[in-house]
Length: 415
Image (cartoon, rainbow, N blue to C red; front, top):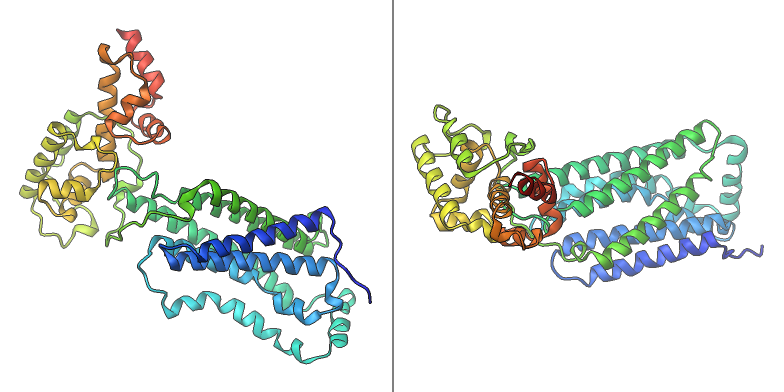
């Protein structure tokens, strides 16, 4: 039987997507730094590429020539969710060892491949006849069940990944005053996009169950979306260097406090910080579970708080855009754990909001000064410790409920 691949527009798009996935994986394997995360992402890209190649073979009826090859390449979607999740996990915990229990994530894939082992011991003609019989008898229950299982697995792992990234970004704010270069918003966005693809897969399963394939067939739509996903990853890989050179973040043994999970809405000033601290006069210092075993007394917490506020007002360390909890800890000769405890329990803030509150107040004062009116707002923001226009605008509006431009206009109108 003379069968050849038809190089129509759809097939060419798929082939380029598969090739780009392999190219990205080679780049990742050659990268230094977080090798575990890079290898996991490379494995994910290779899996995507092979899946697309398999879809091309299936679309062009190559199974009539090599049916065992199609079976050998089948089941790869069982790897997509676990590899995506593990990539996020080891990107965050770069020093964490790949434990034996992590292999349990691949158990559905192993079971699926084990189920197909008998297919390798029959002749190609028997296998083709068996597959063609599905048109009359319908697909085996195991294959239909696995289709539902893989879509539910994919959705579950995307939810787990989004939750993991959310916790990581919360934890960052206990340690860093600027997180633009170390947050995982780019991975969160990619995960949301992948989550959407898995929703499409789930919907397509529902449509197939109802006898309708208005999306063009499950394999076609999934492989097309996979190719598009790889194209986007390629674009991000070239334009967003943080994907392949993620800043390594020291791991810390603490969990987010309740205050970390709530947005800051007050229009704050230094004197308001002191007033807020005074409101906790009768409160015990260990107000969060992570500080239950802390030896810090309320009296020492108050003393540390005064030292901290005096340092912030007199030396203005917040003007250093890379200021960290460790930096303030070194300046005050206070342990990072106790300093974090003081900020969390006495001021009801995380470190990120505490420092950026000072930066916002510094900008507000400068915007109201006549001798600063000739300066651009961004210049004032950079002097106050912000390191980018985007983060400055976001943080300023969160604290003041106004954009910087609106705030300056209001100040000038009042003057």
